[in-house]
Length: 237
Ligand code: BJW
View 1 (cartoon, rainbow, N blue to C red):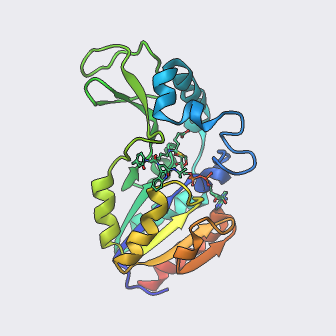
View 2 (view 1 turned 180 degrees about the horizontal axis):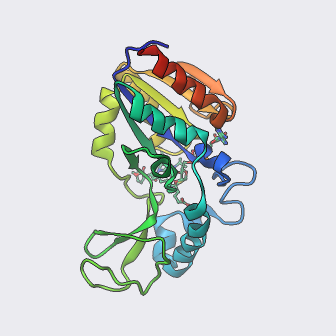
């Protein structure tokens, strides 16, 4: 570790929120165990049965609203606040635990549970209340056109222009708690590396794309990430 990093980019996945009690997608007790991915997480599923998909995400809201950030989220917020260089977080998570921890530069590339997007005007409604097939868009006034602002398979990711810029600028790329199977996020490490970044993987075990990383730290990220952040902060003193 050295203190030369000027632009740190952290990519997070469901594993960072596991120690806050939130289920991941693909682990043994994963979110999709009782549902077929094709029934809830594709744009075709939403077009086929929007009421069912709205209900699926409405049902998730209370748990995500009350969840608390864990020591991994808090360590990243501390890093952003105290590190001399720039720190950005690109998260695949739809929970808001990075924001609750105090991180400010957070890009939700797969959307947010507390948002819905109007398919008529494209604007976003922020709400923890239920959204359904009758909900009226507060911006354009049309009812029945709201979609959970969750990026389903087959849809484009959010903030990709910004992410592309961050990937080409970063000199340290840190991946935390993601299985490395969903693209394009699983390929970000390659882009960062191509542009010269050092790459770290933090996970319980080797992710699918683990061979692309320079360094690997295996274990619960609530335990491993705080000491890594401590070392980064110490390295610039
Ligand atoms: C711990 C831990 C602890 C546990 N400490 N670690 C080939 C190339 C490029 C693209 C494609 C391709 N083939 C197909 C595609 C398209 C597709 C894709 O990637 N499919 C793959 C399955 C193959 N991608 C898309 O469609 C994306 N859009 C796109 O590419 O647009 C252009 C395009 C369109 C059409 C065709 C081709 C291109 C959109 C992807 C949207 C992803 N959305 C989801 C679901 C949202 C709905 C919902 O929330 O219910 O987002 S999928 C789901 O997976 C969710 C997550 O953000 C995402 C990633 O999961 P994540 O975070 O990695 O979680 P897990 O559970 O998989 O892993 C957890 C990890 O944590 C594990 O490794 C544990 O070990 C670890 N862990 N506890 C540390 N305490």
